[in-house]
Structure formats: C-alpha cells, structure tokens
Length: 438
Ligand code: ATP
Ligand code: MG
Image (tube, rainbow, N blue to C red; front, side, top):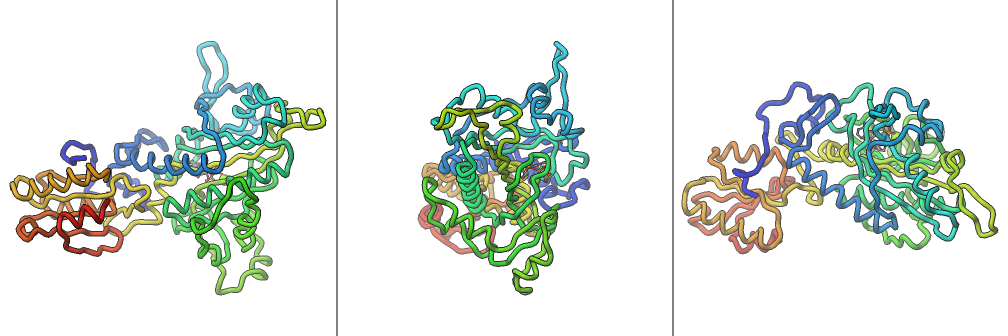
C-alpha cells in the first residue's frame, strides 16, 4: 500500500480525552474515531488489526471443534422474557421498539438466541456435543464507557456456546475452549492468565476469566508467578483427546480475581516471592452454567434411555475489539505502538527518505514490488514529508520492520533494516532484505 493513496489520519498531538496509552495511541495513529460515547468508527488501520485478530480467533475456534454461524445483532425481547433476563439485565440493555410495537433489543450477549436455535433443531443426544460460535457486534449501555475501545458501548465479541448431554461432556467442551483460549492469546503475543472468576448475571458454577496484567487494567488480580512462565504454544494439544491434564496444569497454581480472592489460601499456597498482586485487563471469560437457559427455555434432547433431558451448556466470550487496546497496552513505548507480527496491520514499513529523487524512487519501487510479489504486506511511505516526520509516523503506527532508503544507501547498494521492537538496525543489500522479510 502506498501511503499517498491510503488513509491514516494521524494526529500530531495527544488527544485530551485519552487517559491511557492504548486509547491515546489508537487515536493518534488514526486507527479509530469516536462516533459517539463508547461507539467507534474503525478506520483502515484499525480495521486491519481487528481482522487479523479475528482470523486467529477463527482458526483456533475451528481447530478446537467449534462451528461458525452468524446470529443477528437485534433480538426479540420475548426470548429474554423466557429466560427471565429481560427484566434482570437492567439499563445496560439497549431496548428498541419496531413499527409494530414489538420489543427488540440490541444483543449484549447471545445465550437466549442460540438456545432458541438449538431447541428448534437438535432433538437427540446423537447430535451432541456441539459448540457454535460467531464474531458479532454487541451493545451494552455501560454506565461509564471509557478507555476507548477497552470499555465501549458497541464492541466486537467472539461468543461460543456449547451443548452437551451431561455434565461430563460439558466439562470436556469447557476444557476445549479453555485450551483454545490459551492458544489464541499466546498467538496474539499476549500473556493471558486464566483466573477463577465470579459468574455474575450469566450464572453457573465454573468460570474463568483470562487476564492480561497491565497497570491500566480495571480488575485487581492475584496469582502465582509460575503461571507467567508457562508457554501455551509449547504444549502438545489434541482437541479430540483428554485435555484435563493441561487444564489442571493451568488451574493448579493460585490465580483469582478480586471477587474470588482468598488471602489466607494465597499466602498458604504461594511463597511470598512468587506472589503476584496486580491490575489486569479481562480479555476473555468462560462459563459453565449447566441448564440455566436450557431448562426454562425447553431446550431438551432425548438421551440414550429415551428420556428427555435439558442440554448442559457453557458460554465462552472474547473481547475482540478490546483486544486491540489490550495488545497496545502490553506492547508500546514512548514513540508509539509496537505490533506483535501476528496482528500487525503491515509487516514492513518502507520509508523513502527522498521522494522525488529518481534513484531513491526506483530503489523503493523495486523493493516494494519484490516484497509485495512475495506476499509481504508493505506500507510504502512515498509522501513528500520530511524524513523526521516519516520516522515519527512509522514508529507511531508500530509496523514491526522498517526499511530506510536514502541517497547514501542507494549509492552504496545497502539499505537500513530496522526492527521497531528492539531498535536494532542493520545494513543489507536489497536481495538480503527481501530474503529476510519473506
Ligand atoms: P467486564 O467485567 O469487563 O465488564 P463482562 O464480564 O461484562 O466484562 P463478558 O460478558 O464476560 O464481559 O463478555 C466477554 C468479553 O467481552 C469480556 O471478557 C471482555 O473482553 C469483552 N467485553 C465486555 N464488555 C465490554 C465492553 N464494554 N467493551 C469492550 N469489550 C467488552
Ligand atoms: Mg466478566
């Protein structure tokens, strides 16, 4: 992509409304613009990152055996009356009335709707287990939307729902999502720790929140430092096998959110120098809630003995749009964002230090063409800005690799390759640069 033809409205100054780094940097790097309180337009750079995250989430959900569908954002209030949550949900629910005076709502979550789909279609234990998921916008009329996309009112969520014939099956589905979540966050370049959590209005008895440690997090959390040293991507995972040993490995060491914290147990179980007490950002939350929805909504299947039983269910959420902010909170410096390669909007930023100079232009065009042909996503700064402004903008938007092309380099046949994260620079020939980056 040529920057001159692209759309990245960067801001020079810090926006006053931004209290935390991710919000400030997302606005400054031209990733989002606020449309109204807690509601954002995703500009091209932001949308690209959002897509990269979704792609990883999709891959890992499918690998774990979940099946994608797509449910609407608008839901009938009647379904929520059946579960009893229409009144319980309170002011966070955006309620809408259509021209026929029917009550609708903008879905804050989808337990009711997916249970309705299930009860209309699945009749026998032979069709189980099933895990259905989608990535869809949600709306919660948060009392205090803040921190940009971290606590929005409209936000993108991946939500999955499992259906099993008994609690043993349900536990296996829960474990699949638990392990899939470990892999997703690790692939996004994050260290997310599963912590015992309260179930809140969703209900149920087993629940974990996946938390990233960050000073700006809204949750107070406590855990054993050992959990921060485990690497989910080093584990051998067979989603058709027994995942309990992996789950046990991650739930053995102490980890709890504020509401579930037990200071005596923490002190007894974790040596003082291993105790972590920190702020955290919740990026995912999984629940096992048995028949809380299937019972009142009549989602029953015939079991092996011919008797009707309510399906055992769980739900599994990931804050996809919140993750964009969370990744930035975990990976930035005073100059700007540092994207982990897995989610970077472009892999390479190609900087022409003297646009208009024919030798610089043709060296850039050559590198741009060769990298693009090899399938590498390149943002080519072909604008007339000063080198200093180009460096600052490229550092701000955080593309992992920068290639600097100036008259001296062209003359010597060597160009500088800079790593955004480590700031390391090396001089290489065009051939070596192409080889390294492909
Ligand atoms: P929180 O405690 O942060 O309000 P929650 O417990 O209400 O979150 P869930 O119902 O578990 O959230 O939703 C699943 C995921 O959706 C959360 O783990 C979080 O990452 C994300 N999420 C929830 N509310 C918001 C919001 N207002 N803005 C952005 N993401 C959100
Ligand atoms: Mg929660």
